[in-house]
Length: 90
Image 1 (cartoon, one colour):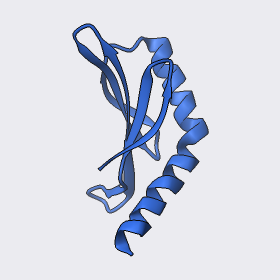
Image 2 (cartoon, rainbow, N blue to C red):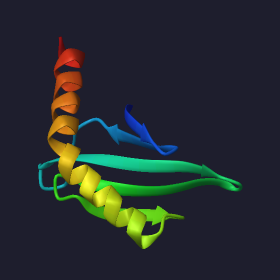
Image 3 (cartoon, rainbow, N blue to C red):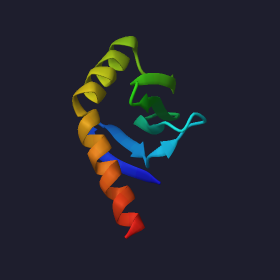
Image 4 (spheres, one colour):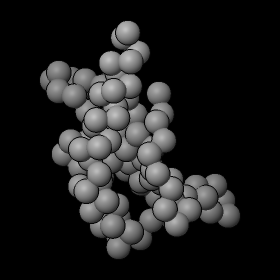
């Protein structure tokens, strides 16, 4: 499931539900998107390590801004994802 987090300067941040990787560790995929003339610019990030795993159309400076934004907001993203996980169980 995709969860909305924010929109800043026409860039939308969404994130996945919590998933477990091959080693059993919890991960979330965060995605920044921005409409352009041919579709979308995007950048996908893996949390909790905050690593950029793929992307297209964002400049290097924008990628650095995204990393900083995720570092400042990752705790809240995890809290929201955990709440959604618990509410789907109940």
